[in-house]
Structures are given as structure tokens and as C-alpha cells.
Image (cartoon, rainbow, N blue to C red; front, side, top):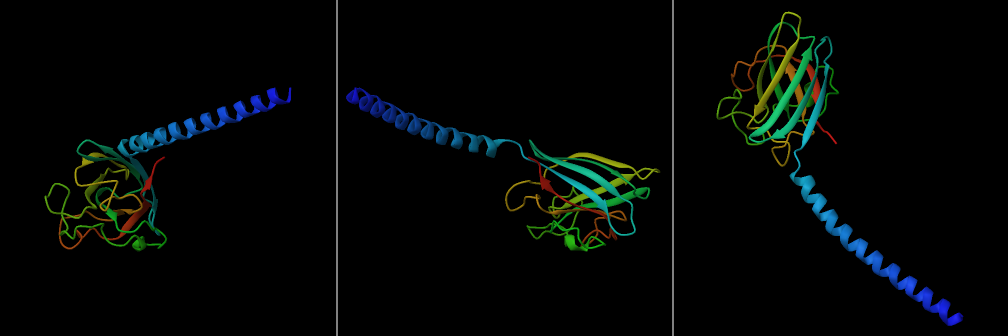
Length: 188
């Protein structure tokens, strides 16, 4: 009887070790495969924009990787009617009452300022929003020069709506004060 129990315990222990090794090996293969799928899956991000001091502009903006760039969809309210410069800024920080803590335009390649359709521009140059008479604006556009990953990735950067139109001038488009600020954050 003692021999039978010892033999049974030995077989149960050996079987457990084999199963554990098999699970570890398949989970590490599955883990590597899952990592590759995660790397290949489209990435998306979001920014909830709040008004800077003395302003009432707000907005919600989504960013999704698509073939040919990043699709940007935004809905805004509380703007003055007309055009407003819209830019990704260097720093994901909206703590300053006037939004200046977000730094300058995101420009990792050191280009001159420009509008989105120009071949030379800052990575953060998104052009203008057009607010209607109620102060509402929307945007749905694919920006070929944007990226959510790597050295030119915009996740963690600031997003700014300006008081005036970006006229494409140097060095930053003459768009005036910052009326709304948000941080671009990856979506799970």
C-alpha cells in the first residue's frame, strides 16, 4: 500500500510538472503572439479639452491610426464664431491658467510652421477649426503627417485651440491666445 501511494504521488507530481512546463511554454508563445498582435493593432487616443482662464471653449477629440495617417475627429463648443488655430503642442500639461504650460507647437523634425496641406510644417500643425454662430465646431480628417507612436508620436502631448485663425505665418501662425487645452492620452 505504501508503494502504491508513493508511486501515485510520484506520478501525480511528475504529471503536474509536465503540465506546468507545457502551460508555461504555451503561455509564453501565446504571450509573444499577443504582443505582436498588440503592436500591430491600430492605436487610438483621446483628448478632453477644457477652457483656459476667462474662456468657455471645450472639446473632445479622438485620434485613431488608419491607413495613410491618423484620423482626427473632434467636437467643440464655446468658441467665438470664425476660425481658430488647432495644434498639437510639445508638453501634455494644461496646469497654467492660460495654457502656456503646454509649450510650443510639437515639432520634432525642426520644420518651419505651415498649414496641414503644405509639405513643410510642424508635426503639430492641424490647421483651423471653423466655429459657427453658436460657437460649435467639428472636425473629421485624416492627417498624413501625424503619428501615435515613436519619436513623432503625439500621445502624451498637449492639444490647443487658439483664439484666432492660424494664417500659416512664421513662426507659429499668429493664432493668438490659447482658449482650450487638453492632453492626448492613449485609449485602452
